[in-house]
Image 1 (cartoon, rainbow, N blue to C red):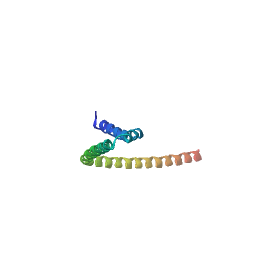
Image 2: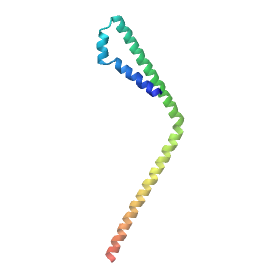
Image 3: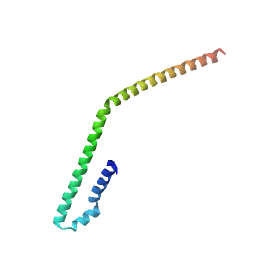
Image 4: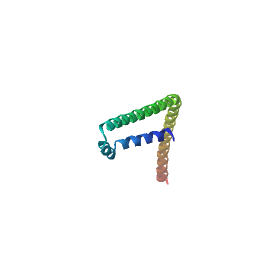
Length: 109
């Protein structure tokens, strides 16, 4: 089981523990059992939050390590976009020139 799958299962369990059916069942339990259950449910939430925080910390560390490569890639992409814009502008101008030449040829002929 991957970490993501494990977290998904924990989330599902947590949602089930807050479901309407489970709440109805819980109301039928003794005060002592309800208190114990609420404490355990809170503990599950805390552990899930810790796992998610740890996972986010790992992702943040990975982003920090990859930031220089990411920045370089973004710069290269921006340059390519500018080159494409220049190429598009050149093609538009060329299209206009060809249009003018075709009009002149039509008028002369």
